[in-house]
Amino acid sequence: MPESKKSSTKPNLHLFVTILAGGIGSRFWPASTPDRPKQLLPLASNRPLIVDAVQRARLVAPDERIKILTGEALKAPILEAVSDLDESIFMVEPQARGTAPALAWAAWETSKVDPDAVIVSIHADHIIRPESAFAELLHETVALAETTGLLFTISIPPTRPETGYGYVEPGVALAETSKHDAFTVASFREKPDQTTASEYVDRGHLWNSGIFVWRASSFLSEVTTVAPEIGDLLPLLDRSSPEEFFTQVPTGSVDVAVLERSARVASVRANFEWDDIGTWEALTRSREPDLSRNVLVGAGHILDGANNVVYAEEGTVVTYGVNDLIVVQSGGMILVTRKELAANLKDLLRRLPGNVRDGIS
Image 1: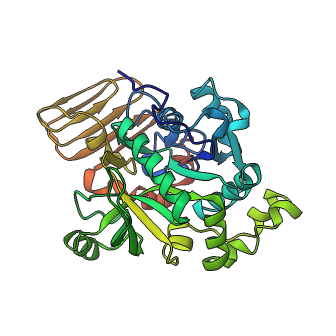
Image 2: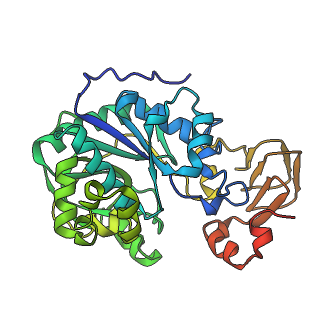
């Protein structure tokens, strides 16, 4: 049963939500393409990821204070997927420049609407359960961001040494909240190697979820201080246009460009389940496996096999006597690979002929 779209928490009139929905999700090839990236695929549930993300945002803020950051090509398919959206919900990036410029732009525009705005930034490709706990924790984090002016990330207790995530080293505890563990961040490091990730887990570091909460004004001040390559260009948004800003600004993630450099980062430990739908292997955590730990999406049969992921959009896929494989059927393309290689699909796409990569027969 879907959870309510309304939060029971008293609404904060300064609270805004930004949904990051750019990127093509190349690690979900061949189902994910530039015309239909992973945000439009039913990977976490039977609905497209972007639909889940919008419903999650609505637990925190009303539609008029929600923005979706994406590219022009995705406006129409997102509107088709979430048919009750209004076109004004979009902030369309003229060029893809990464999360640092995108979130700086969002903060700049939001602060003009409300100088006291607090922004919650979420991604379109996360699994979060239960969403009621997510909404409650975010409202408490918003209150902390308002009073402290710190830049908050929601941190996740790790379940494995994951090299694809950022890590948060807990610092000094902040004043106690009613339910949640809040602390300053002693260090913030992105995507370590396997050995370092294992060391981080052993030392009690937490995953960075990529869910951020900050006052728009605080974030813009910190961008100007620690990332002048972005901050110095922000006036272009008023003097010129977003097109000029995105033409000149360097590409960069907010994690590396701002958070790793900042001494004003804090975190709240999550009390909900979280996962990042980053590769086909993630479906083993987002979907209920069978007794042999196989995951099947679409029409298919897995016989005498274990630990397989099968995703079929058309027709029927049958596997027999194989283990630890990923099999994806989408359009006229079929991918078969070992599960351990799921994170390397970007390398595969670089090595494929263009007509195969683009699904052109």
